[in-house]
Image 1 (tube, helix red, strand yellow):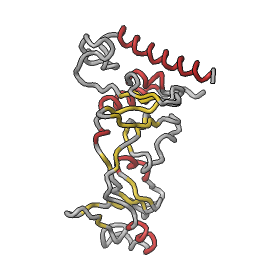
Image 2: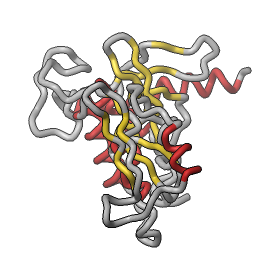
Image 3: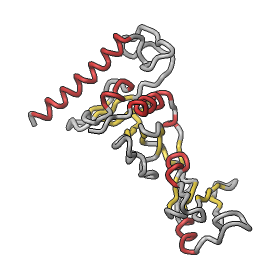
Image 4: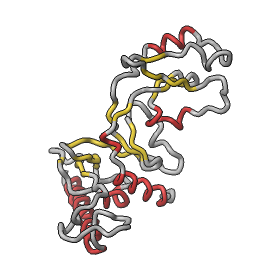
Length: 229
């Protein structure tokens, strides 16, 4: 098996805990002439950089005062660039640039939240495969959908709390993200967070180990249940 780049994983885990980005929404605000695709610059910004095609640029799609998209007519402001071909211009105008898009995924490799159906590039990184966490809201909580057999469970699980929902058929759990804020230890409920700490929601190594052990016990119980089915 390939060695896991733990530096990337730790950075992703810390970003997942710190960031409040799941309360924000995105929209398609760019159009890539090379890929002939509308996309969100937050979710997919670095994935449409094509230096080998300097004339096929990324076009910003801004909104006017009434919230309507403003479509460019050229690949760059005049006198530079070229007129956009009619068929591509027609396709560009047919896309949705106004609907808000809640972020429903997190890429461990990029340490970034994004909208899964807008950007399909995350999760296919050469250094870290299958690195996308599926995010679901459960009330006010941001949760990660976890089947229990993902490679990232031992590394990301310490940043996730006890299940707030278990699938009736045992296929997955929703585990809340333990955000890094000042409050009592999420394990014992008494001790204060130490600052700085890598595992910020816990007050001590003892509480950290207890939480990790509970994660392991849940995983072992799921595997045992699968083995008798």
